[in-house]
View 1 (tube, rainbow, N blue to C red):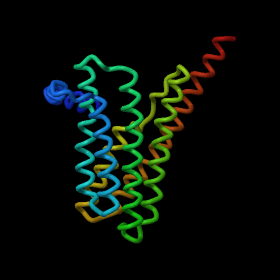
View 2 (cartoon, rainbow, N blue to C red):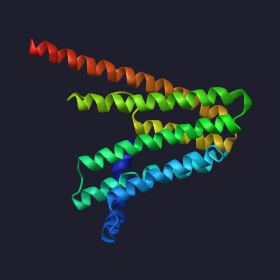
View 3 (cartoon, rainbow, N blue to C red):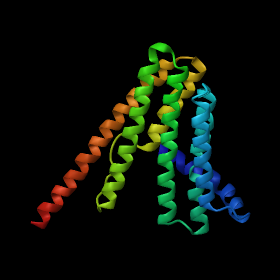
View 4 (tube, rainbow, N blue to C red):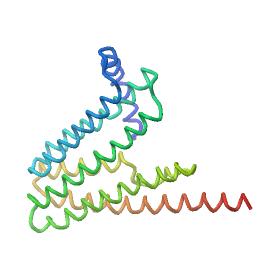
Length: 209
């Protein structure tokens, strides 16, 4: 479903991408600008208690994340550099979101949820980065690491949707439960990727023997 939504957004963004290219805007500039917007919003809106507004704004920026890819394809400049920049800055954006949520709990969270909320936020940050790193490291070794139940789109959807609902409902428990589930899913995905890569490595050794 999420892949289909991304495809739909790419089609919608085609006219916008073409316009930006005509006026001289590069795909890299869009990637960098989008990341800066997410980081600033997450590190300002969440710590200051504006979690509903912050989630909506970040969600908008995330949905437009496919704009740079559309521009790269239309201009014929899709390549390894663009993929590297996009993936690397995605990690920065993700980190800002979960650091912002942790800061929200430490500054504005309901007392009974504040500590737990900060803990699960940081768990989502750490294991989300490990999920991404394990795939990148596997691919760097010539193996496939693209398995698991908690890919980046799912992680963003769950965290931002929960924060938005919690903001309107004034109920921090919604975020804590959602992030707790997300942290568990990320841990499972990390383990799945380790086992998947190990299976490939063992198979390669057996074939060489």
